[in-house]
Amino acid sequence: MVKDYPDKLKQLVRKALLDYDTDAAMYLGHIYDFGWEGVEKDQAEAVYWYRLVTELVPNEEQTGEAMMRLGYFHMDGIPYVKDLHSAIFEFTYVAKIYSKDDDYKKYALYALPECQKRLEEEKQSLYARYLNGDGESAYKLAQLINNPRTADEDTRFGSQDELMEYAAEKGYPQAMVYVAGVRSIDKAKQHQYWLKAAEAGESEAYRYLAYQYENGNEFVKADQSLANSYYQRYLSTSNSVQSLNDAGKAYELGLFGSAKDYGKAVSNYEEYLKYDKLDKETLYRLGCLYLTGGPNLIADPSKAFEYFHDSAHRRGTPNMTIDPGHAEAKYQLGLCYEKGIGTQIDENKAFQSYLEAGREGSDWGNFYTARCYIYGIGTNKDNGKASESIDFGLSLMQWFIGPDEEKAKLIRAFENLKLEIDPFGDFEI
Image (cartoon, rainbow, N blue to C red; front, side, top):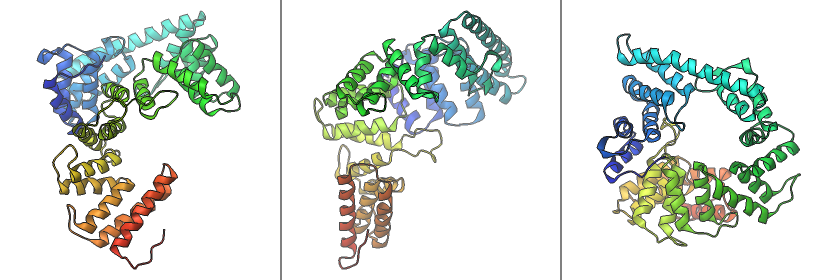
């Protein structure tokens, strides 16, 4: 699927992901679409970059070109890419924005009825097999008749939930996972579906049962050994992208019987990022691991800085005002700039990183922002602004999620800063 990027493309990738450069993303799409730059063609990778172009919201024409290529892939692509609902959505967009004489519009108007015809044929074929008692066909039909991209809710074949439950009763494992995980059903029956899906080898069922046996409930007694066994089976059998991230956390934190191994954690996290390039939380975790080093991993300040930088500036949604980057990564980035960890000392950048981190809800970001105002680090001394940062940081304590000792440590740190501003003043929390 997704490949490592050749060195000559890495700067282009960073430009697309960090600068949100649509030209870079479009060019990367073309590289993998047509095999430019001596790179092997890769439909899945081309689709990723074209999709990113549409999410970065450039001008209509550039979006239209990317939508055209996406429609082509979703209509005729390899199984991993093929998606007729998405093709209909994309060709509809193209037909809408281009003038009547444009070649893109002409092709889109030709392709739309063809996509709709193929979709109908696929539904009818699956429906016939479902009527003959095939659970897999019922599952696939359920996926086709209710699609959010085209708002298509086709009730001719029954409801999605009915089809899913039929497929589950027929023993189709993926339907069991769907019914057990999504639908509101009897809890005892839900547990049985998870067990049957696990017996059939569904890795997602292993994952769910691991958490169930770790915590226990009214149906199962907590059993850490059994939880560990199910989780290790999940990690060893799953081919999902999410399992790479889960394996990283298991090795980082020593979960479910996994010995802490930062080297293996890094390998899994870095592999995961090839698929989910915008995951700022994983980038942040990598930064923390390289900052400290640990079992089977040598600390690397330069890599830590790079990962904190990417996490701090990478957003998870197209709209930066909704998701402006990882707040704790910005605080760590400030430390890197202030102390010269993996980069040159730059107190101005340190202050700006702390300030942004604090505004976005980082407790330590507010602490270090106040400290900068008190000592004039990267900014002018200003005890009034320092006090505001301290007060804001303390107001966040009610939302603090973490160990009690970490919260107490933060409060003591803020107390000490407040005393530095006014050693004889009254201070209440």
